[in-house]
Image (cartoon, rainbow, N blue to C red):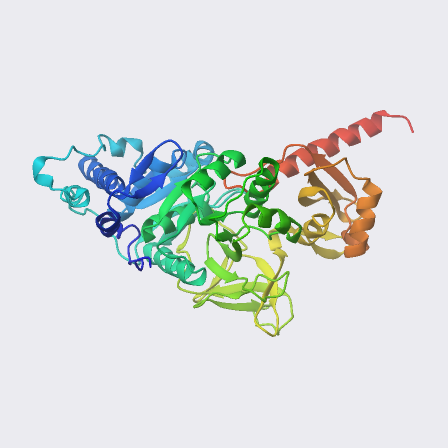
Length: 500
């Protein structure tokens, strides 16, 4: 069994280095570190932070995952608050972050962070030798102290910076291990950059729990599949889009992953139409779909026997309520705002604001809408920020996207409401095909009419060969919306120049 997580993120590394010694802790495809080597680098990074007098707020560049994870662990253990930022996000928002958050220690804080050579008095235990050089703490690392600042994915707009405490993550680790039955024999693979909170959580879950971690520097499905084969990875932490592309890559290359037994999936709904491909790739794997956000951590997950279409029941220790616009709790089956109470919640935003995120005592809502049935299953309707008002009807983009994805050959779909004088908003769908020729728009409309009310059927379909993704592997909705608006403007311009 894995050792139970402690109260401080990465506080168990010394114990893992003693127990696992020379076995592999981390591999990024270019470099591999044993537990002894990982601890030695972490302690060296802690020493560098102490020697350079780095401020409490520390930025770690997510572009190099191995180095970033060493530095994040060093920052967490030294009582610092680590800002993990994808290079693209830092380039765009770095100045604003510095302005709003204050002094931010950077790469210079890790000057000369190479582990010192072992001397003859260090003994045979590499972990003991590394720990001897651990510096005195300048800042306090406590369960309720903040340790991490992340950026929301930006899939729906401007990213916000959110802050989490040590305990919110160590309890999340414990929740994950117990709910998904992960044990000390497991090997974890994370297929994307740790600038995305799901990938970072999967990576830190492995390292904090003493499990081998393999991580991808870039999302390249075929290369990842081969690495998973070689590593004997048994747990995959991914978004549905990544899993879909991996399953298709495995089918085209004839690759099988017999060791994979757990797939932890979050970020969007997994499509039943892809299950056959997944079963061929990893016939022994169980898919554990869970629902959560950067602000709330785990909320609910689907278990065997839960109704299709739901996101399951809440995790142990998580309470969920559905409330109306007046703040009153709604009855089973009624749709309203989803409110969550648990010990896993974030501390708050430290940059930017999100009007849809509200607090009420120990409860938080991030603007997601849904309902609870009589058996306690949670059903998602959509996000308030993606609601489209057309012809006086409130429509969730997610509902239309789910209908489109049931059409054969459609791999990705995103729905938007464009300004329309007559209807208020005109619904347009962006579509990427996974195979086959372009479908007839009239056939697509008939398909949608079979599943949706007429007012919800897209008025136009735009087809994409390349599908923009955020660094975290989600659909880049602002980029897709921008391209649709560009095409619509160009189309209108051509229509005005063309005689009737």
